Image (cartoon, rainbow, N blue to C red; front, top):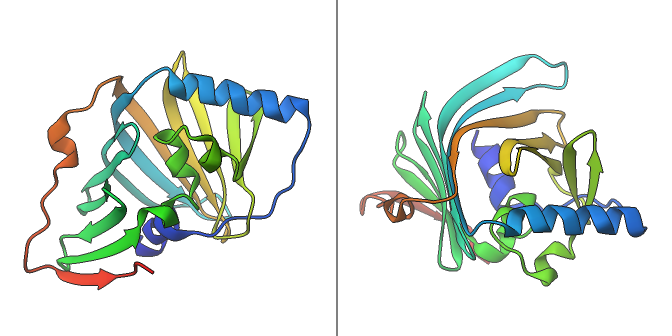
Amino acid sequence: MFKFIKCLAAAACLSYALSGTAFADDKADLKAKLNAFNEFSASFVQEVTDKSGQEVMSSNGIIALQKPAKFMLHTLNPDEQVLFCAGNDIYFYDPFVNQVSIFSRSELSASPFILLSDMSDNVWAHYNVRHENGVYIITPNRQGDIVNLRLSFKGSDIDTISLVMKDGNINTYKLSDGRRSADPQVFEYKIPEDAEVDDERR
């Protein structure tokens, strides 16, 4: 699980050259959908499958974002884990071992997850987008552990988020109770002062 969270925060991404008007239109279409709201929150059920399609892990929790820079992925069961943005830094906290790992927010830009809350052209320039069978496939321009992120919508709201990993695993978040609002307290998670710190910032 930690490797997966670290991929979200610091992956340097896959080389995948795409061009053409159709793909440019797909990117503009996705940006328009995400630009339609400034806040979003939902419950999620996560399922991780391996390259053979077998489920290797499941969990549930909440996801929330507030543009331009707030993001929270809070896993509640079976074990609590927290990934969130705070200013220019990304924090991953594991209460079971009472350890927090800290990354630079600039490293999160190497993960397609950043596109959910950052609409700036300089960030989106690092990704290609294509639309296939109702799914937006977001592919980074440089090689890393995340091959692509896939978004599907129910109406105008995000319904499913899937991360396809280099090792063949697929991490799928199925969202429910989606709202175009986010409780400000969600972003104010307090890490205990006695937590062990692993500072990965460069």
